[in-house]
Length: 187
Image (cartoon, rainbow, N blue to C red; front, top):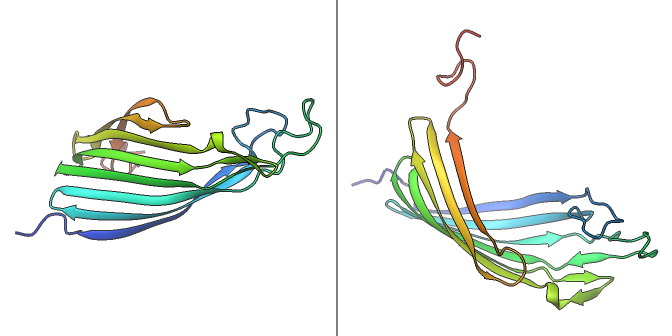
C-alpha cells in the first residue's frame, strides 16, 4: 500500500537566516540592538515513516563585533568593543499526523556557547547553555483553517531561556482576495 506521504528523507539547507541588530544606542548599558549583525547558517534533516515525521536541525549563530559598545558617555569616556563567541544550536521535532493539518509533535532544542568579551577579555560567566522541551498540536477546523496550540518550558538553563511559553495560532490557508472563495465578492 502506497503512503499518502511519499517523502522519506530530505536534507534541508536553511542558510543565512540574517538578523539585523543595528538600532541600539551606544550610550545605554541595556542595549538590545547592540550595533551588530548576526548570521545563522543551518542544516536540517527530515524523515517520514508513515504518519510519523522526524525533523532535526543544527546550526550556529555568528555575531559581528560591536566596536562601539557603551562608550563615550558619562560613565566611560573611551571606546569599548564587545564580541560574542558563536552559539551552536540543535532543534528536533517528532510528529504524528492524524490527517491533513491535524498533528501533534514533541519538540526540543539545545544551545551552547556565546561567551562575551569586552575589549578582548572573555567573561566565562556569560557562557550560555540551555535546553527547552515542549509539545505542539495543530487541529484542522475546516477546508481552509486550523488552530495550533503549543507549550514549552526550560529543561536545563544556565543563562536565559528559563520561562514557560504558551501560544495559540489561527491559520488560514490559501489566498484571501477578491477572487478567492474566502474573499469578498463583487468589489
